Length: 254
Image (cartoon, rainbow, N blue to C red; front, side, top):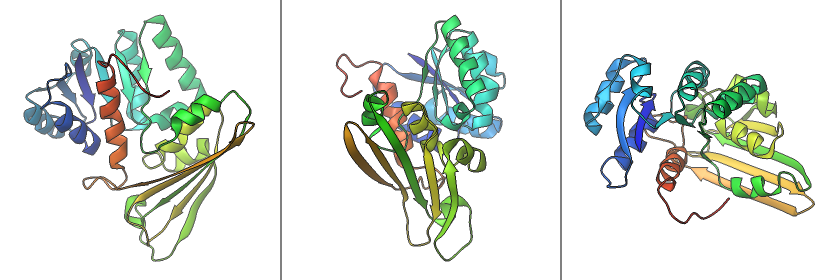
C-alpha cells in the first residue's frame, strides 16, 4: 500500500519514523505540506518525495493520511476522495460540520473510497460504538490539560469551556478532536468540559457513558508529544495501529 502524508508536523514524524523502518507492506512515499521545508525534511528522513503539487501525490498513492488541520481536511479531502483514493483523517473536528460530513460521505460513496477516523487520544471508543444505538442516553467528556498544551499562561485551575462538542471544536480546533471522535462514534453532539490545570503534565480525557446497558467510565492520561504539546502520543499511535491493521488477517475489537 502506497501512502501519502498531508501535513508534516509532529504526528506525521512519529507515524513515518515508526512505519518506514519495518517490512510491513506500507510504503510512505509522498509528503505534502504548505511549508515545503517541513515536507522535504520528512521526505529525506523516509527516503520519499516532497511534492509542491498536491494532485501529484494523490495520483500516485492508495491512501492519504491527513495530519494537518481541520481547514486542510475541508480543502483537500474532496480532492482525495474524488480520485477514488482512501483517506485517514486525524483532524476529525472538521466532521462536526454535518453538511461537510454528508458531502464527504457522498463523494466517498460515489467514488468507492473509504474515510478512516482513528480512535486518537482516547480509549473506550469500541464500547461507545457498540452501545450507540442500544439505549445510550448520556455521553460526556471532561478534558484536562496543562496551560502549555492549551496555549495559556495561568497559574490556577480554570474551566475554559463547557458545552457541546460542535462548539468546542470551533473554539479549540487543534486541541479537542477527541470530542468530535466520540460524537461521531455515538451519533450525537456530546457534552464537553475543558479544564486548564497547571498541576497536570498530561492530557487527561475522562469519558462517561450511561444507558440501558449500564454505565462505563474511562480515564486516559496521555503524555503530550514533545514536539507539539497540543497533541497526545496516543493519537499518533492509534494512526500507526490503523495503518498496520489494513494488512492483518485477524482483527480484534470493534
